[in-house]
Image (cartoon, rainbow, N blue to C red; front, side):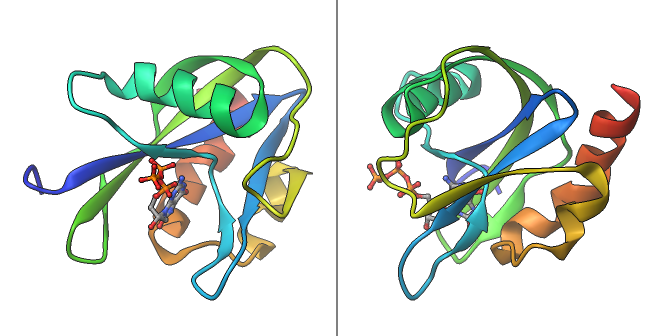
Length: 129
Ligand SMILES: Nc1nc2c([nH]c(=O)n2[C@H]2C[C@H](O)[C@@H](COP(=O)(O)OP(=O)(O)OP(=O)(O)O)O2)c(=O)[nH]1
């Protein structure tokens, strides 16, 4: 899937809870905040930039949560765990956010590409690995 542009999603973890964000609109749903990786940027740099832009928080990106998942024909989603270093999320592009516990993760109405990352995310939240 190397020809597909990468979208990076950030599973921000604080005190054993994960931040889920609601993308508004007809193609909306719960997602990991983030966005497209720009030319010359690493995934981590894109994650840091997007979380500043979208939620006004400073993060430290961590482990990948598994192989990339296709989004339509043109994009692929990579998701990374991350720690919140500074700030309280302030909504700009999302219509809601929620801090979700490990057991609740699978109950949200996630965008389809996000769902395959949930088992690994649950493991990280519960065990820290
Ligand atoms: N940010 C994010 N986007 C996701 C996730 N899952 C998923 O299918 N997507 C899709 C929705 C969008 O079609 C695309 C990301 O586009 P985006 O609009 O967030 O990217 P961006 O911030 O760089 O926006 P733009 O400047 O290109 O408008 O990926 C996810 O967990 N997080």
